[in-house]
Length: 161
Figure 1 (cartoon, rainbow, N blue to C red):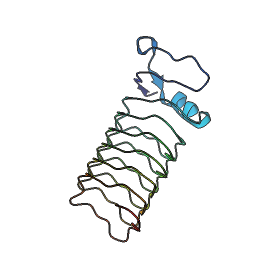
Figure 2: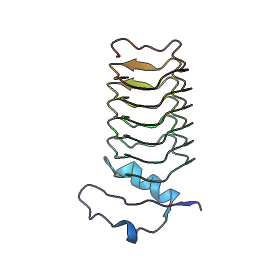
Figure 3: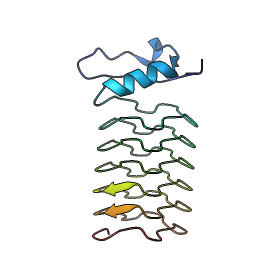
Figure 4: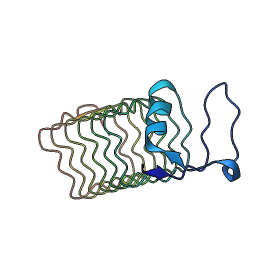
């Protein structure tokens, strides 16, 4: 069974476990944790290349998390905090990012095709080479974002700045 290292896991109403006491977490345990926790704290978690397709992590704190090349297809990340997260090459095909904060996130070469990106903060985000083909991009803040080479063909981006 594959295990991952998580700096800390904080669940609402639970005692937060210091990073020094966290044991490697089996992927199946992570799935259970994500499935029944409405807002989980995975701040600075190291999850590169992790298969998290269809994960339900609404409102999760993934600030500074390493999700490079992670499989997040169809993941529900609505309202998630992904500030400064490493999402280089991540597969976010059909992901729900409604209301997510991706300020300063690295989304270079990420697959965001057909994703729901309404009311998303992408301030200072790196998007070079990202694919937003046919994404629903409404009321998104692209201020100071590095977006050269982004494929926005057929993306619906009315109301975005």
